[in-house]
Length: 423
Image (cartoon, rainbow, N blue to C red):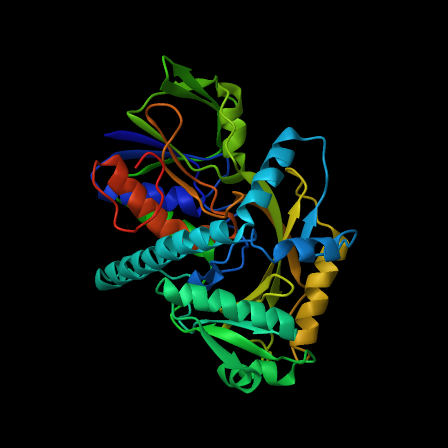
């Protein structure tokens, strides 16, 4: 089958890899000059099944009220004259119900466990072939840390729910936190405890995506970079083709047997002219990449500061700090207050941190669904397939979503227990 994948981020690139491995002829289209150059570029770097609790949960509303008016709030909602934002917000409120939250955790854990296994198998496959994937990956687990006793108590409830669904997220005290990650011993933040998932991983999503794109291209996948997808042409309820635009050449119509929409936050924009309103809204996340000096004092275990919604991942001689969510449409401007808050929390946690240069700040738009459960499977019109809406877990869920999509598109039942679209 001839398949066009729209988008070459980590989700689009993994989709292309698994579809090609299933025997399909694949072309990937992306407006950037290389793969993984937008939301996948400088994210938190975690393969974090333990991050399966969605933003929408019964405890978030009091927090949001507490954060109102704060530019440095972990979740910042900027009201806009945007019907899509309002519709998304109302659906988000529905997902905060306890029963919905539990169902969403179950779905996310199921797909995330499968995805992590797919990534590990992929890594082993390349290593066995003498071409290991190099992306600064570490298999030292993820430690969630807490300084507020009430937040720690709530986290223990979430951890217990995840254990019910097969994830070993173990609650530990403050002393054990410092034992797992010795860099926390110097922290100015008084820890009360944490949760540790030894099976989680970390790594550079951008390096991974580019490396996999190179392997996919060598295996026959065609990548068309610096080419924008202008519109999807639909007639009689079926995709007839996609119109592309590259610099200096006339618009081009491309046809395929199937089309995979993997454009992240921009997926709804492409479907809106068709009268389809996809429940995906951009959540702007921030990151800082810190070049480390000798005797750096930085962690080597990936950490999640749940109270500030920040993650810390060691990527070779760099420390990546990322997180927060700002709902402000497609605005990518860096807010200095939020950048400074991220840096201040890093210094509080790691006062002995030694840098070899200045922090490099970045922002990216994470495609969030109200439930945090991604949209994977058949699209709203024939021959269109979706692989989008992964929110903060695009890197974590990418391989599993792609492998499952390849199964669905090939007429096979996918492995994980997950609410696939039209599956």
